[in-house]
Image 1 (cartoon, rainbow, N blue to C red):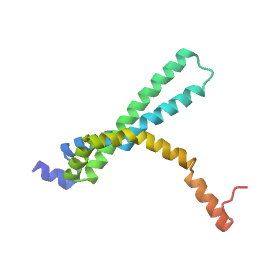
Image 2: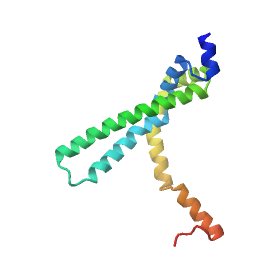
Image 3: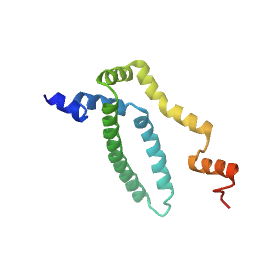
Image 4: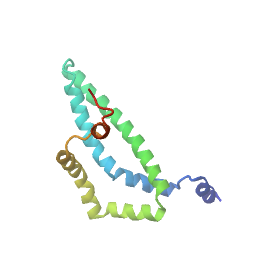
Length: 144
């Protein structure tokens, strides 16, 4: 009866949530977030030349705490999204792949692949690029 109620209300089962969390924590977002956190923390510390060594160290600690809180929120919500979007069978199959040797190697390659891709592509600003293309086409929305 409870299972039927959960299915009817769209509430993911505990197994679906557990598998969703496993997928989230081994996915691209979880793999790339530490790289972003390090880069942005380093930039934040470097931008504040007025801080002494102790304050810079404390800033890094605070950044780490904020990162962990944000990471937890993102993983929790990504897990729920996977649990709602994929069947239990799909969740099990994907989790099994991610636990495999190939899956672990794939995860390990993600940061380098993302960095290489971003380096090759260079800066991208979708809104700016669309506005510039629209300007060229119509003569409107052009910055002066």
